Image (tube, rainbow, N blue to C red):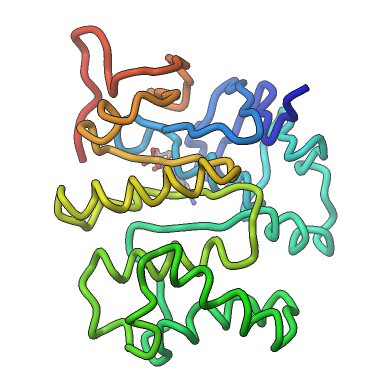
Length: 238
Ligand code: ADP
């Protein structure tokens, strides 16, 4: 039986200022799935990621990650939850004063990996992400696409079960974005569940994956092998 990686059950999130960012959102994602989350700016996409990371908590409802209700976690358990994920952002968030190798090694060190594990694993993830020749280079000497590869290498270094990506191709040229998307697909095919927020209509349409469409805090469409938007009302671009 396929295991559920993530499940949202009637999730509501209202921020302190009264904004209802999520309203009665329910869906689940099986282990190994690749899911896009689309929708206009302000529709609640990043809120979903922040809830998964437990940077914030639900107002009501439940979120489970591998069967554990993460809305009930005590603070001392949150670091363990976060080890389930690799996270990739639009703006890469690299350590600019460390080499490519060190950026990846650092991510392993902070979760307690041994020097031997780090020496074994970092070359592997640099190879996977096409960065072997760049190991000793600093991020400022890399193109945007290469920097995002470093961020992806870092995100997968600890073998996370789930890869969360918030607009990972938002700062990249279309051709480079295509290559980055192929890398996400390779990682997914190797077994990692991928949840990706994106506005990149062309990429979504090319990939034929499941698409969750958000509109003003509500999940308005959940469709397999979907195009970015069906029907006449296209979500607004940022
Ligand atoms: P998206 O990622 O789709 O752009 P968000 O999840 O960031 O949307 O935001 C959903 C809604 O919640 C928006 O109206 C936004 O202004 C509001 N919001 C997001 N973060 C906060 C916050 N920390 N405090 C108050 N309102 C917030």
